[in-house]
Image (cartoon, rainbow, N blue to C red; front, side, top):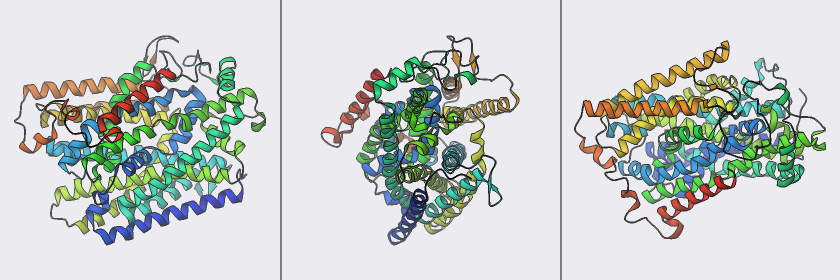
Length: 581
């Protein structure tokens, strides 16, 4: 092993790990003075909008944003920034339409909400999907990318072992166990406390990398000029069938046409992102649990809008460094010593080890570990909440608050183990982010359809919703498994086809839209063919008129008015798309 950072930097990382675990454990003692179940799982419904916004941002941001966004940017430019900026529009939907219904129902989990709107079968199905997404999509990818970074900055060979364990798995186990300890002890309060601190550290570290990179690349104009006139560093190794027009000339644009090597054409983003975005931001327990813990409806509305403003930053501090790295390699930057990353996946750690001075390296590495740990802790706590309320409480309704907390702690331990075991699956795709996107694209459509129709169409029935979830889920799982089979056998992909360099592209994002349309058609057809009377308890969970949230009191003046703030958020993201189109 050839250590790529100083012992001082390494010491900073160790101190960070000790401090964050200690803070999380301290939250456990505060919780014990304040109560049991409600405090452990929902922080006693005391969260205000700043904490909600920061915690939602933190639960979303993981090491994948630092590592894999830099990786995809090194390959394709800013195009994957769409997954950040499109979130701004979806968070408006959460604030206007979903959050108030969640708060009025006062449910601890979203499966509970779905039972009140539809039936128990829908609740059970969503519980399984939510636990799966928390363990695999949220925790698994975070642990894998964090381990990837540690291996790179420590200069460990991919085939090396530590204490007889593969180096990657060793780092995954250590990070998973440390996160599981304070999450188990402190509950949601520990998660929120540590997330607030870690988010600040994460943004400071990311801004440092971007600022130093901006200095070395020579500024925006010099970077744009370099990208426009030089070949891509990986062009010679590219697959000509899929990358025939691979160039860095359009790396600073976020919207791409058909045949782009990124396989993310603008129409795929436009059709597919709302499907996966509504599930992720409006219907996924790991993210929405912060909204459920709000102290009132106003805080629940403003928190997501604050998070939307924060989502402007990742394109500039997580994606842009990968583009800078390409430009610096093209320039033959002396800070890189005339070298280049061995692969796109190493872009961020390569910049970190070559550009940053001692002390700052440790800060950024700690920030990357913060990103991984905050996502893991959020997902572990949501898993514990789901298992306690939607499994144990569902079948043993007399379970006490103390009993639920014990169940939650056990679920946290088991969840940590399962997440550690599932983490390596994300090393099988072209990029970690692509693996994550593909999986979400096949999980999200049925859930999105069921929630949208449930909230906006009172004739949607429980049987129709359950049928859509089962059939849509089966189609999504089937396609994803076929994709994994193709990865290992080289057979033609099921949902990826390029007619030529300028032809149409069918990818997982568009497939997600098609599955959503299928699920919507099932809900409408089954509801009309087999109508059911609307349950009395479901009436407050439906908007009779979609314009209802836009009328009446908005809870404040200026930016404290959620309608005004929603308009400002919308205008901000439209402006960004115009500037970077």
